[in-house]
Length: 281
Image 1 (tube, rainbow, N blue to C red):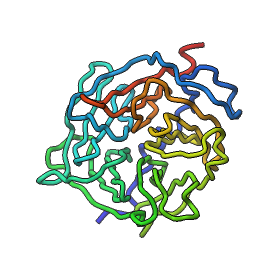
Image 2: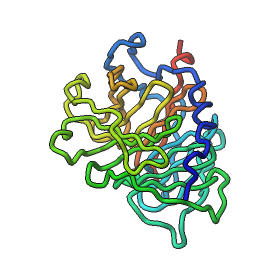
Image 3: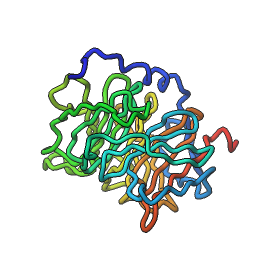
Image 4: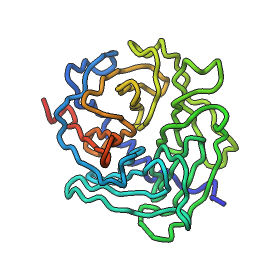
């Protein structure tokens, strides 16, 4: 079993020290104001992924130019290098490889974590090392009967899980984010925000989440939207995602660049990187 006191802060400390960035947007207002804007349709870089990643599901930042991702069918993790364009299989879990509806990926130190739509967490121990026999552990968050999980992010000492659909009547019209820490028997409510407090958005079906310091980014494929909220659930920005077929993942690189992953319709998926606002000033 996992050591409940294992140090998860290494990765998080680095993330927290990063400057909170303003995304590359057109018409963005000053920080703190709620704004509606459109992501620039000319990203800094757009990379076509191989056919194996047609159903790309979730993104995690590995380094300044490397990402990790997973498909939503099997527990196979891929690395993506923006500088070289190289995409390679990093590791798989299980023999035969575990099949499930994987909907999110994140990093905690050297461990790679995956989550399924039923809220089952897989911890790939030292997964960043890419060993063919990567050991893993499995944890239940107790969310199976509460919501359909669609995104995962590591936040200092806990994991945040965002729900695409809430099953409870009282939560059906809310953005629900749960928190789970190693040793917890089940996830606890972290943020619950009624849709009518999310600006022009009256319905939201989250498909990816990323946390950077005090700021949380959420993409919603069905609504072609990206939301920025604070830790209290207060809306900072809503953005329309133009030229994005089906946004399934979002992450932020060390330089403040935002990256969005889209599922492919025929071939492989696509990832798009947007410059931090300082590059455009």
